[in-house]
Image (tube, rainbow, N blue to C red; front, top):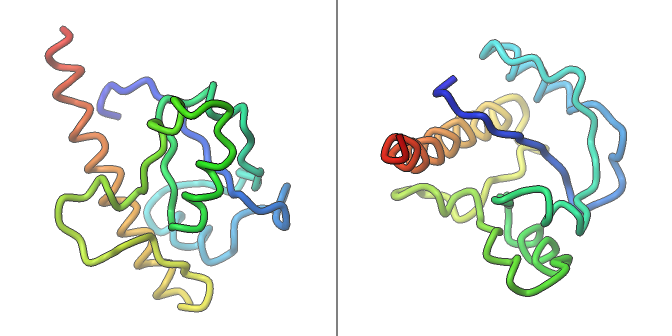
Length: 132
């Protein structure tokens, strides 16, 4: 997979779903694209994540503010970016919440996140190539 040795994790700022599996609609869409996320469990973002990750991507403005407020020191906030900021041209201001959009909403979010991942990889690959 692109020769990238990354550790990727996902978390939320709220505590209400800690330990739960992904939404069944998320599982269904991921499976449609050959991705098995059935073993994932929700966890809450913590201050220590700033020390473990070089880049922290947030889905929406509220989460962005909450994550920034948890920074153990101001200098580390430069690690935080919104997901949609990785896209050069997009109609989205933030990743929409698919919860009330039915399966179509989950499909839309999957496609957006896939586009964001491609944009992130495209930004990193030239850096890896020049380091060789």
